[in-house]
Structures are given as C-alpha cells and as structure tokens.
Length: 330
Figure 1 (cartoon, rainbow, N blue to C red):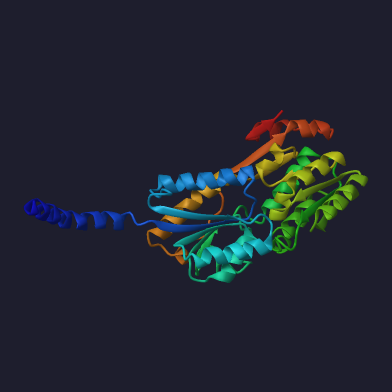
Figure 2 (cartoon, rainbow, N blue to C red; figure 1 turned 180 degrees about the horizontal axis):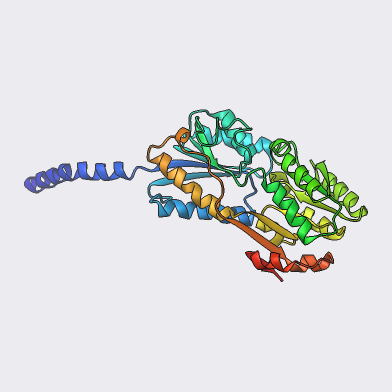
C-alpha cells in the first residue's frame, strides 16, 4: 500500500511541472471596456459582440485566457469618470475605449495602462496622441472619419433635398467640444460652396433639441446635420421624431439613425471599426506599445437611405444615391 502511495506521489511530482506550465501559458489576460453608450443600445451591443468575436478569432476567448470587465456609461460624464477609475483600479493589461469623453475620462486616470480607442473624432486635438502616425504615449486607436466628412454630409443633403437654403450643425459642446474645431470649418466651407447658409446650434437638453427643430420647421428650406456626438446618439429617437413632425430633412453619421426613421446616413461601419480594433488589442497583449501603433482611419463606409421617410418629407431620392446605397429602406 505504501509502495503504491509512493509511486502515485512520484507521478504527481512528475506531472505537476507540465500542468503548471500549461496553466501559466493559459494565464488569463484582463481587458477593461468602457462604452460611451447605454447597455440597452442595440447597435453598440452588436459592435461589442463583433469586438468579442474578433478577439476570439485572434485566440483570446473570454473564460479561457481572457477576462473582460465591461462598463456602460451612456451619455453621463460623471458615470464615465466613476467607471474609468473602477477599470483603472483593476489594473487590466489594456483598456478598450469608445467615444471621446470616455477616452478623456480614462486618460485622467492613467498614463501607463495601454488604451485603444474607437469613435474619437480628433485624438490629436484632444491631446490623446502626439500625432496620428506616432501616438507617442499609452493611447492609440481608430477614428471614425476625417474632418472633411462634414463637407460630404452637406453635399449629400443638397442631393437628397435640393431645395434647402440653410443647414444647421447640431451638437452638444459639453460632450463633444472637438466638433467646433474639427468639423465646423469643413461644414461651413461646404455649405457656402452649395449656396446654403450654415448655422451652428449647440444642444444640451431635450428641451433645446425641440426648440431648435421647431425653429427650423418654421423656416422653409431648413435642414440639419447632427454632428458625431454621444449626446445626439442617445437622443436620436427624439431628433428623428421631431424632424418628421416639423418636416425637416437631415443627414446622419450612423446607419442606426436611418434604420430608425432618419432620412439618410453615411458614415463608418461600426462593426468593422470594432473588429479592426481587436488587432491592436491583440498586438498590445503580445507586447506591442501603443506609442508605436499609428492611429487608423476607417476603411469601410456605409450609406443607408430611408425611402419611406423621404416620401413623408415630400422628397424623391435621386437614382444615383439609390444606386450606391448599401441599404435602401422601402
């Protein structure tokens, strides 16, 4: 009996280093995720699912060799700050960040933990990176569009609603202060080139959104462009409703707006952006430094046209837009 116990003990000692090495090889890495959207937001949940799937395809599986701590901050800046501190205190290997105010909240908490951002409009202007080719610090990531995109939105608006005389750029300067310096120059230049009067209308509450839409509805030939802004995205249902009620055509950045009743959207494919971001998270987990990973532009854009909304607004979609649209909602 003792001999059998001795043999079993020797076997255990022999096997233990192999088990230990296997466990060490499969040591779970930790990722913090801070989303600048509500957890109930179906589009952002889809984007995050694409992110998780992309990581799995690169060999990082939640529950096996990866732990993911996710926080949803919505539009609440205070909540972003609280969650940013929570995630930094967990000391993850890398943090995945969504939107400008979220990234700003994280930067205030750490200058050492690697951060990979998405949907940050002007990372250089915000001080997140020293430059797009060489970020130089602990932050890098993927921007949704160049500043010139604002001009493209104006152009699309004049194509789909050729009778417009003025266009309002709507955004919340508290949540997205970069809009003023990053997008407005292109927006104003494009508007004037199409003989359209540019108007800048800051919005900070639902009451202000309604006031702006009522004002636009009273002036024939008015239109609007909600600029890339987490506040605008959270209040998209109200904006779409009021645009229909007061007969004001608008062009949006994200496809979700058009699918929920907006006239037309043109912007980055969020699923593609989130999936591409996994490549940087993977490289950082394998030893790369954010300082050496250049900030990247989107490579896949999508256009969604809502024909039902166009008819309700008394507009006819030009054939050239229907031909190039990725999705047409009848």
